[in-house]
Length: 337
Image (cartoon, rainbow, N blue to C red):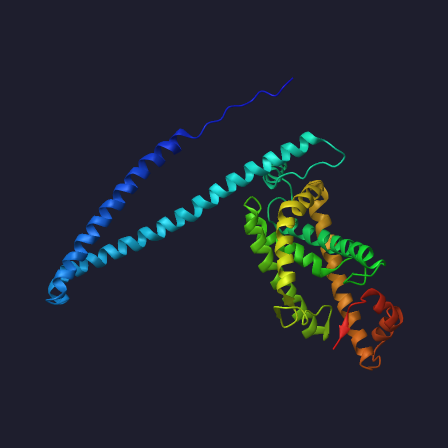
């Protein structure tokens, strides 16, 4: 049986109020223009005799300035909020139409649901990781740590013909840079998930560049090492970021919030509420311990490279478990300065 089509119409109260306010605003604009110009003419006439002789006119004009400044602030907020609403409505309609077209085509792979649909499903299920909360962001970070490694290793295999390790931690196929990038993009672009793509591009451009710069700076300051250097690239900043890769970050911002994030959100939505929070905290503890242990091991590796001998049983254990050959395999692009 075909679905019964529901009929919708614009809120009549909204239309009535808009028409009424629009008329009043247009009349107000005419009144303000006439009043201000009249008094400005009076001020021009009185200027020859000195403005101190027309104090009341001066005070009246200053009162009008205060009123106009206040009106300007209100209109700017209205302009911003109404433009946002209009852009979001158009974007949601287009994404809903695209989803319907992809669904009608069928096929093995299910189409990516729009962000608006995910928002609705999360709220309806009262999911533990709904919205832009700590639980949602952690799972995005965790999946990003793993997914980034897998994608870059596959990219290396395709472009260079061999596998190359891209992990950033000693236990498991995880890299904090990818996880932090995924977390930052999700956190800052979440509010633009139902907006047009230009917002996602600008947000990805800025956020990705800042994250990449800070990661490079932190690694060099703490460990005295670098994993990338763009000094030979045009329009670079201290070799840490460059225009080309910042543009790539902008494109990634669009792909992330419009294509990748919705799929990740659907995966996270499948985690049962009963175990979701407990599992989140267990994995958080694991990632913290993994990160601290990795930092300690890399620091000891740097000491060995600089000829510093082991001074404790912990140093001996690290040297035995993670010798230079193992570290070079784990982190093939890491170089100490």
